[in-house]
Length: 186
Image 1: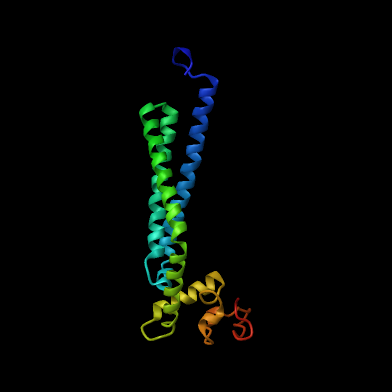
Image 2: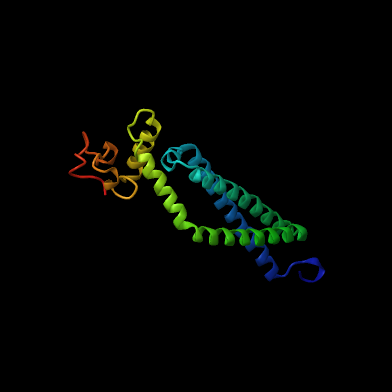
């Protein structure tokens, strides 16, 4: 603050920089929120493959976090624009708490990354046994959708199917599928 309650040039620059950066963060949070909701609505087939709610849980965490980021950046914008000291103090405390939470989450994610990967692969391999089985229609559709959309085959390679490669692994031609045994999708 300059004399007489007016902000000097440096203070104005900080104020506008904080407003613009928080507005950009707000837009990013809103985009991630929208993508999270879209993923939750459109990508439920992945849960069939994983056999657990790991994917859905991660999407819910993404949605909640992005909503919190939007709210927090909104407070940052208002606090910077109106120069509310109490709001800015609350903003910085919450930013610090989120930073600590993200640091802990990052450390836990790093520590347990192999366990999560192994669990997902085990669940996917066990769901492969239900492909095409009576009562396994949703799993069959989930595998077909995943392999067609992601242009992949099996968990790691087409060898995961142990010789009975589904049509969804095969490369499409203009009129039909190429034979899988000749051209499986790597």
